[in-house]
Image 1 (spheres, rainbow, N blue to C red):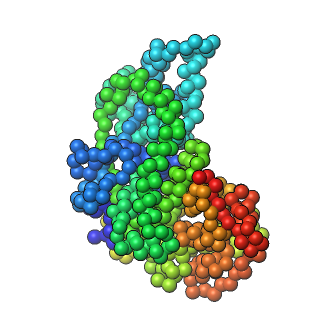
Image 2: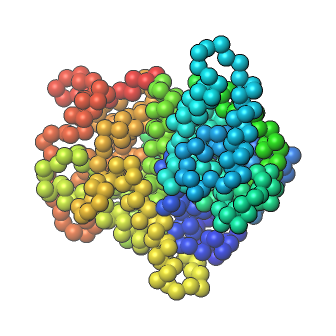
Image 3: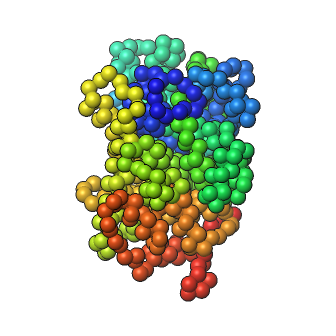
Amino acid sequence: MTTVPRFPSLAHIKADDNAAIQIFGRRFKNDQTAIEYLVEFFLVFLSPKYISDPKENWQKGFPDQKTLDNWPANTPLKYSPEPRLGLKLFSFLGYSKLETRHGSHKKHFEKMLSTLKEQLEIDTNISKDELLEILEQLLCGFVGVSANRTWCTQVFLPVSESLVAGETIWKRVQGEKKPNITWEEAIDKGLFTFTQHDFLARGGEVLYLQLCNLKRLLGTKELEKFEIHNGFAAGTGEDALTGISEKIDGLFQQTRQIDELCKWVENSDPDTTSLIKRQAAQCGWCPEESWQEAYLFAYEFANICRSSIDPLEKIEMLTLCCVFQVLRSLCAQACRYSGLMTEDFHALGGANGFSWIITAEQLDDVSLKETAKRNLIRIQEIIHSALRHPDIRQPHKPKSTDEKKADAQGHELFVQLAKRIGFIVPRVGPGARMVLSDTLLRYMVLALIPPGESRTTQSFEERLNCHYGIAVNGKILSNAVQWTYRRETQQIVTPKKNWLEENLLAAGFLIPLSDAVSQVKNPFN
């Protein structure tokens, strides 16, 4: 038996042997890029879903309360993502590596171009070929992840519903052995696979399940107690989940012209759509305790969805929201299972028991810089310790091999993912610590303050601490120092200048009311 209760209640399988999966859920993986957490979240959110009976599916959003209350044991959530293979072929083939282009791909691409040219009616000086090339460049401009991937494994920025596409893997080695195979035969014989979870590695699924897990607790005394303890008005969690469902639709309404263009391209290739046998992908599970961090995630996600910012910036902010939720989930679960944590130290942190000491990017205070470095090491120690919890089921493998795999999806994942978004600097070399760049500070304001509302600077710092254990000043910083050094005596002098206030003022979020009082405002209502 494992230590961690699961939602949904799924039996232990071989894939769960990794201790990191057993603690954090199935799964957060270091190969998944930042944008792919959001893409995968949207994919589950938007796709047809069901639990037991495919006929009783729902399209968008979260399951209703009755479905959640009657979720059968050992029954995973299933969803049917749109692969959008024709759209990817049109958008990415011309910009992919030559060696990844199979003959069948190139022939079908030419066939699509011919069909699209026949459908075009233009009365300008530009030719049909030139127009199609412009459209191809436009859609390729929405690439979210390309790297060295085959065209079909590349990922769109999810700025439109039609750009949210499921993972497709081309079996390149098998394809090279069959140079004369046709496009249709390649699909029919399984040279394309659609449910592997290689790049979309389940992290977004876990985030979606965390919000389902939160919804399950709406109206309970346990949730009410959490809201009161952390200063939220009653019903805030329910309001956030409703806001997410409504505003995701609103986000995609803003980009409906892109949606129409994508549909036009896809509709030129109906045979591909009919050939692909849509298979239901199965979600994994998240820890049952994770509803607490899911509450904070829902609040932040809803605030960003409700903000009146540009759709591309909104995608950037929602991506950061997903990444910070992964970082918070790792720390929150580690604090619950680490042998290094005691109740008194748990109380020194934020809502989930941990502290992140954040400093300005440019910092001359040697003492504070050293404390920030030690804080990051302490966080890694907590996660490392939790992965070695004695009650976690251990597979029959060499201990060193098992622990190495767990570490890769534990404290190593925390550092790697945080470095990708600029939350930990420097990216390479010694002396790593956590900072808030201008972009990350902007995210914090949009996520923690509802659009059009304001908070005093002190209240904003308290909210930073509640959500992320972030400590920058005063008593919160003193507690974080104590949390960092455990039983050691360590004194630190609070900086005379509040760098956070200075950065908020420079970014246009701070409203000075007097020499002693100022407010932080989210103006995007």
